Length: 305
Image 1 (tube, rainbow, N blue to C red):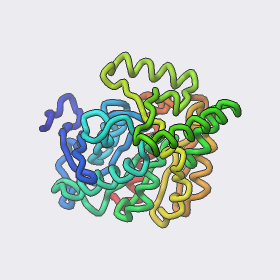
Image 2 (cartoon, rainbow, N blue to C red):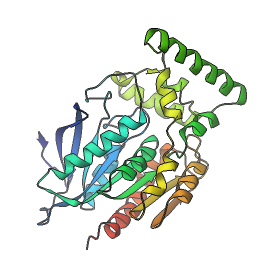
Image 3 (cartoon, rainbow, N blue to C red):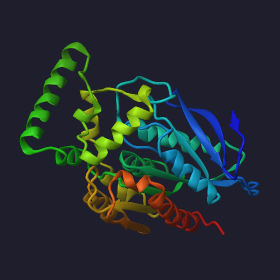
């Protein structure tokens, strides 16, 4: 189903595709212009920790469509309008979902199958890197405020004694799962401890999307902690990667972006923003400048005249 374009906005088409047999729901943001003979260059846009496609990834996709890219946002399995078991966040499943999204784009008549990129933000940034390492048809990748080593990241969000207690809780849950097959359900903040700015941002999202509230299994924390996109980063080259980092980021430390950047081969770019918070990178006054840089990067790496 397509929503007609109005006031210069791109047409938005609601689509479905499948990942490991699970139905995923997506939104395609299509440029207003007539597609080139070979089709539009396209970008898969992946959201962050527990997000849904109605969040700011839609703003990213809409902005990219204004630069001539067909952009696809979607709900990972188990989230939003997609099918799949709830209460879990397994990064490698999300990697598979990004690859499936790129495969879906290759089936579209209005997409140039040789010019597809991935754009992941926050937790989705590392997911995009891991997907690009596995899927050579992703010609370029953008990782915005991403995470290189998720075990290190989870630990960095806690004081020493808090991490000790959390690790013990993970171990107890592992034993429980071995006996019963069930994992404890917790609030997402018990896994990803938010800084004050992110906590306020989450409150606003829950007020706006009350049905989006969710819990996660402790087993998800274990799967997250084992996810290390920094180990996949060198495998993306010689395809290009662009990193966007925020100095002073209170949720995904800038050092995570730097670690990913250092691990990546050439060609690579780093865009550093200062004086803003993790979520302010999605606000229009900052996002539009980021998208200008991203669009220029993608045009160059996808060989778009």
